[in-house]
Image 1: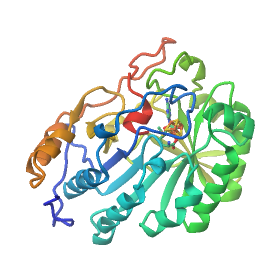
Image 2 (image 1 turned 60 degrees about the vertical axis):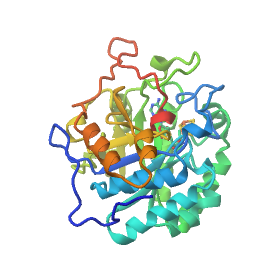
Image 3 (image 1 turned 120 degrees about the vertical axis):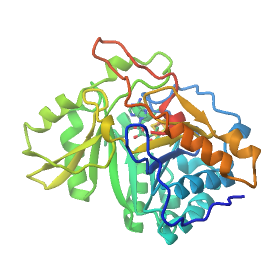
Length: 344
Ligand code: SAM
Ligand code: SF4
């Protein structure tokens, strides 16, 4: 049971050792997925036994406790969050925090495969913006990069989301030799459909069963230069506390984001922490240090105080920044865990 009030007045704040206020929690609700993207998973993934995962009720208690501590933005991710059975019950539960005003935003990162089914329900639960990951508009290439995905299904999902009233942002991983030739098509498609677009650099997360990660890496500096051959790019000052930086393409008046953890390091303004589906709290995507909160929470079903103490203690260990580096043509700072474990 969660003994925290849903709207503490005023909300306590989580402040890390570098005076950054932590008000953004990203939660992976499952490590499973209906795709096997080549940069994210190997084809034969072993997933966690179900009993290791937080139940939906435990996820609710965990998130509600963070919200009680001042977290006002929650992003649900995975794995593929929409393949978790009963996940809409969790979203519906979180909507009480939107109603109370404690939570300002409830969002989702998805591969889009299940959106046709869930778009209306997500909107009804208070979700207003979602990120959909899509690396190519070519169905054969889509099948190759996701291994198991179908482009049509995702495009139908995006359409359903927009019809439901959800604002969609497309996330595209920049992949050398794969989507270099599609940058303009992707930008034009997003402009036409009024969707924002963010490019992401491949990060060294998890063993891919022989995939060549350094070979996949395409620097966004280069991608930006490529865009500038056809568009006028104006730097925007907008900041979201994350690693993204934005430009406007003057010709189409559209916003393009760049997530460049490798060529630039924007950790100084980091406002976020990440929780895995087993209740491990990672204070930084690029560091191994984590706090295991699940057993602490399970030990005291009627009392959140030990959990709150453990969260505060973990935040007091949040590091200054990550150590990713490809500069010597090898995967320095590589994380052994997959992105689908920590939640991208
Ligand atoms: N399944 C959902 C999806 O694909 O949007 C949510 C989880 S996925 C791990 C979240 C994001 O992480 C996706 O945009 C995906 O492209 C990105 N991602 C996965 N592995 C990555 C890697 N090694 N480097 C950079 N981005 C990665
Ligand atoms: Fe699944 Fe998302 Fe990873 Fe692709 S990036 S395998 S969709 S979790």
